[in-house]
Image (tube, rainbow, N blue to C red; front, top):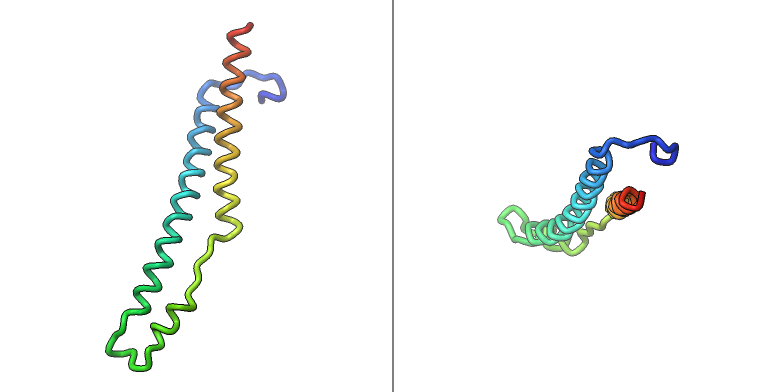
Length: 100
């Protein structure tokens, strides 16, 4: 709407900022949670139990790998880009309104 020269309701950019900040927060939180989950899984598998007489759990715990995939990085980057872009749009929009 902005590119077409139409007036945008004031709630739209604010909702866009909130949505992009939420997306950024979700991405950062998930990356941090994934890192701690890897440690928890390794510790849980490494614990010796009476049913694991051959120590397979401990051996397998060293092979566990959890990595942040491309999609999660993309979501986090999209949240960051959206946040920065909408905030810049709000700031420049306010400047042009004050100059007019």
